[in-house]
Amino acid sequence: MVKYRHTGIVCGEISNMVEYYTKTFGLKVVSEGEVGTEEFKQISGFPVNKVAWVKLEEGVELLQYDPPLPIRMSMNHMAFTVDNIEDYTNTYLTTEDVKVAYIYDPEGNVIEVVEIL
View 1: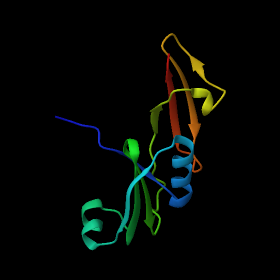
View 2: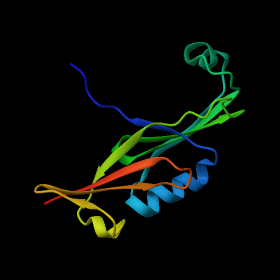
View 3: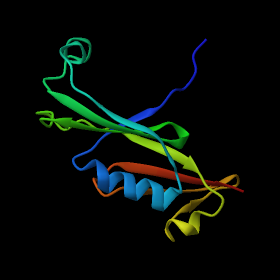
View 4: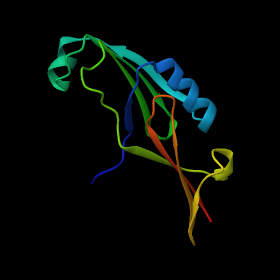
């Protein structure tokens, strides 16, 4: 059995991203913390001393590495189903079944917003 768990987004400035996702989408912070162990380096393979993380509702996980990763890692996109797409953008595509648009968070990550008709 496979079950969706979360989408991890690498951030340059995690506090700005928390503010964006909580204000724009109304997501609440579920938990937050920081890990800085040799074990984390071993299991992740990342050359970092610590990682700060904030878990939000709907499976959104924000991550800030210290030092920053040498290669910009992020994601392709994540998608939210919304009640009214015009709360997020006035530029969208309408099909028989949905309205769909792509918007960007403060660090340029793509967010697909979908209103089911």
